[in-house]
Image 1 (tube, rainbow, N blue to C red):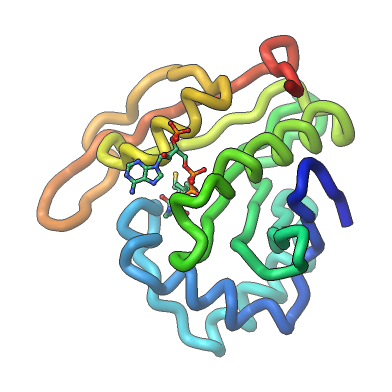
Image 2: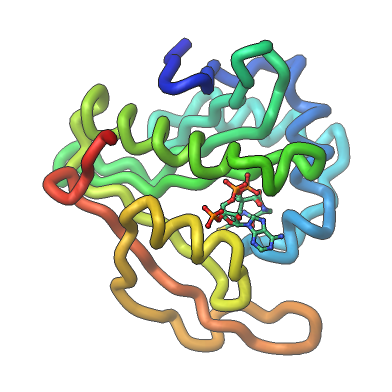
Length: 173
Ligand SMILES: CC(C)(COP(=O)(O)OP(=O)(O)OC[C@H]1O[C@@H](n2cnc3c(N)ncnc32)[C@H](O)[C@@H]1OP(=O)(O)O)[C@@H](O)C(=O)NCCC(=O)NCCS
């Protein structure tokens, strides 16, 4: 368990899978992700076995200070030599636009830079994901470039924007 601000991060357990599936299968979530959602419980169980065995992927459940499940965080593309990690978070539909996204990203950066000793945290965001883009810029992520027409969704191609923040740019205010 890791606590920062009033957000708690907890290792994902099998009993969290239904909650994760509910978020992941919702159109408002997967319309902004690389792969289209709609995972069955069986697929979800297989996925859980894969991530449990992997050293390069870590999933955590986000809890509020009242211990309510708010969403999940993932760390993947973990590179321990170059101290780089890809980060991501999805908030449950019920808890969006309440300021949790900002709190969660503050926790993610604190954990990555001051506990796991990463030097670079990066992410990918679709060019039409205005809420996420606004959030990442506010938190201190900078744009590195755009993978042009990388995502096909809703009958159109969208650019996938790569953003990053370095440890030296991070301020835990
Ligand atoms: C993107 C996401 C993580 C943001 O989390 P959140 O808890 O909804 O965001 P917050 O409430 O912290 O808001 C962050 C900023 O966006 C603004 N915002 C939030 N929802 C908004 C909306 N629907 N319209 C306009 N602005 C919005 C907030 O006002 C805030 O800006 P401010 O600091 O200037 O007030 C969350 O909405 C989510 O999981 N979305 C679906 C999946 C997704 O897009 N994942 C990210 C893929 S890269």
